[in-house]
Structure formats: structure tokens, C-alpha cells
Amino acid sequence: MSVDQNNDDRWCAPRNLIYSAADFAGEVEEEIMDKDRIVGSGKQIKGAVKQVVGKAVGDVKLESEGKADKIEGKVQNAIGGLKDTLKGK
Picture 1 (cartoon, helix red, strand yellow):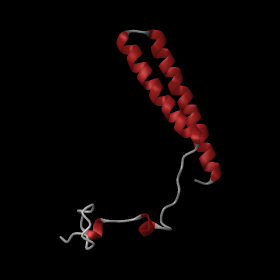
Picture 2 (cartoon, rainbow, N blue to C red):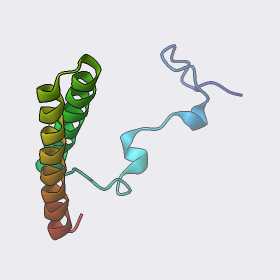
Picture 3 (cartoon, one colour):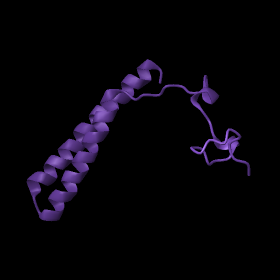
């Protein structure tokens, strides 16, 4: 196993494992999800946490808020998915 031939102390990996962005130029396709999908996923997670905590402490209101947040997140995520489909992603 040979080290970087430049004798640069910052690199301790074998030369064949060191890549730069230029090595992948043209191969990387930008895949950014629609904002609604990201926010929707966040709401689903928040809702799941609320639901579990509400169930654990016996707070029916908190548990139902969690269920509502999860549903809202699923709807928003679906809208974002539709937008991504229409954009061709």
C-alpha cells in the first residue's frame, strides 16, 4: 500500500482512495427534493415523537396532536412528491 506520492502529511490514505470533485465531474446529478417533502418529513417525525410521548405519559391530547401532525406531514410530503414528479426528478 503506497501513500500519496506528494509526501503531504495531511493525506494518509492510499493514492487510489483520494478523490476530488473533478474526478466525478459530469457524473453527479443534482437531486434536491422539493421543500414540501423535506418539511413534510419533519412534521411526520415531530408527530411521531408527540404521539409516542403522549401515549407514554397518558396525555390523550398530545397523542392526538401527534397523529394530526403525522397526517399533515404525509400530505405535505405527497404534495412535494407530486411537484418532484412534475419537474421530472
